[in-house]
Length: 124
Image: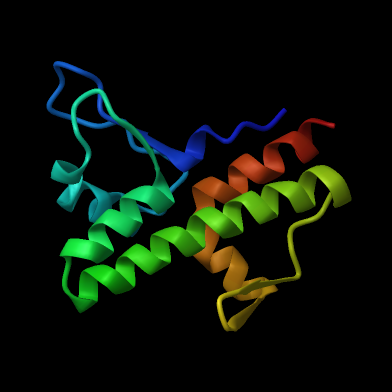
């Protein structure tokens, strides 16, 4: 079934690279790579924890992307719950003081995440 390993970033000890969830849209993966120095060797962080670190030290543009990273993670968790419990992707998602419609949700999630979410449905 489903896992939540897409919510974490890992920096193995002795490695100069981090393991980033491949379900993230490319623009968010690039954003994380630009701030990879905030993840210490041997550390495993949730994406929202990394976003909080970036917001503390970054500029306004970085803070905006950090918010997008948190939005993606929360929407992904919600979408997975909808698929597991209701066999459907969310029709809308409320986050912060905004409500995202179905089309916007699909756009935020990206193709890789949608393929992951729908893979179990297609196998059934």
